[in-house]
Image 1 (cartoon, rainbow, N blue to C red):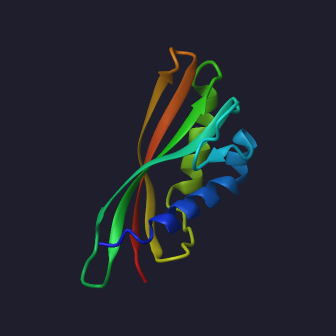
Image 2: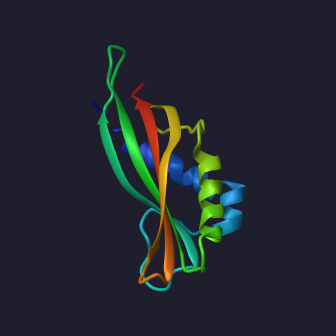
Length: 136
């Protein structure tokens, strides 16, 4: 197994979201690897939890990454958050993202959960993607 491509994968996903016209039309530059302190925008995207497991084979090192991406909003209802989540899914599903190390074999949507947060004042959609990477 190699976890060495994790940073490259995260950077590629971040770049894909911050450079996608549909995502930026909905949230501007409010895509965060680390959510800043202070006043937050009404709607933003946060890269979250990641798990990785070995996916090496006879041809070399590889890993299977499970990545969470959240859409968080204080807008009433889920419509706005779902529009952002849809744009993220469109931007990442089977995307051919260049990595600074290794190669992305695939990136696919796995599941999502929409829920109320902050005593029902906010909404969160947590999306899960699965990525397979190989070291070159």
